[in-house]
Amino acid sequence: MRISKEALTLMGIPLQYQGIDWKDYQFSSEQLKKVLKGYTEHCDEMFDDNINLLLTGSNGCGKSYVTSIILQQCYSRYYSVRMTTFKDFITKSFNGEDTQEYWNAEFLAIDELGAEVSLKSNAEKSLIEELLKYRFAKGLPTIICSNLDKATLKARYGNTLFSMLSEFICIEIQGVDGRQTAFRKKKALDFLR
Image 1 (cartoon, rainbow, N blue to C red):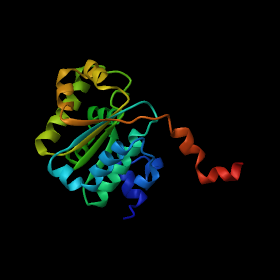
Image 2 (image 1 turned 135 degrees about the vertical axis):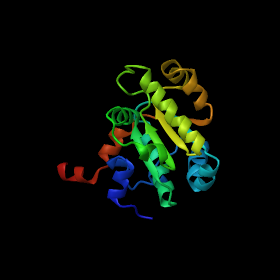
Image 3 (image 1 turned 30 degrees about the horizontal axis):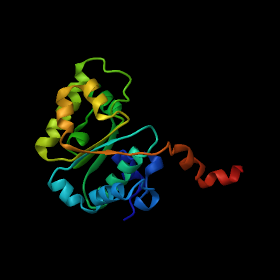
Image 4 (image 1 turned 90 degrees about the vertical axis):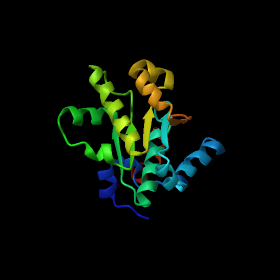
């Protein structure tokens, strides 16, 4: 199923990840392939059982890339999906903008948890806790991407969030920063060589 750029943009899928599929991704192991492809091939069951994912790993290792594929696959099966960064979610929430699309999306991805400049107050921690509690209660799966490991997430956000993350399947995405390689594959660069 081809998804329009307009729809992908409204979902929050970054431009560089629009239209990608598992054939575009290089899995670092067969186990990772089984888990990630299994999630999308059985997204009905993932939705019914509220299976949440926590993707961790270093900068550029492919967390957002993988998440974009998952969301596009779920959308192609007629689920509502949204992707946002935690920083953008905080900004919109505290500016009084409508964020219901994030609260109620059937599959939500929160990218860059931990990349916000600083937690100015406990309000940011409370916001992520409230969002996750709401989504758990409604049975809506959430995917969180973070450069931070679970221990650092616990230290930064506290025991409540850490406890909620115990209900997530934790997947460490390993690899080197793939952004430079992806950039070099752009066809338009052929005109500059």
